Image 1: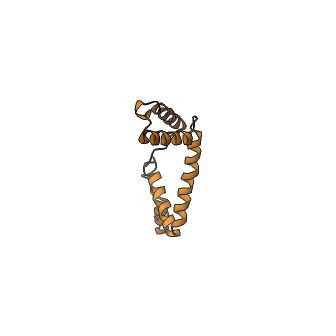
Image 2: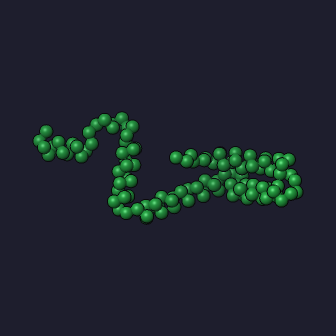
Image 3: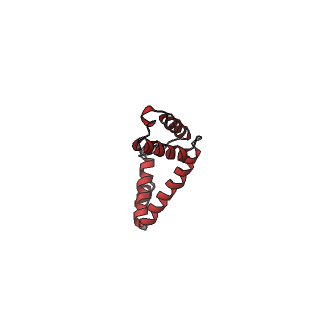
Length: 112
């Protein structure tokens, strides 16, 4: 699982990159130094000094990923994914050792 960066993480990255621009290795006028400075400036501009822009972008694009995946799956596949997710959520729950509703209905039908 990929960790989600917080607003504070993005702010820290922003200022680290801004500091990196002062590095002597990037002060040269050769083609490579100019290319790295431009790349770092583009990233800094994308992040923004307050980090809000990246959090907004992450929320917007992560939602698209789930919707696109759901659209690509068949009804049966979506149901299977949902079952597995529910099973994983309840695996460590304090009531996980209790019988499931399905097994309870089955026992009731058998007259137990």
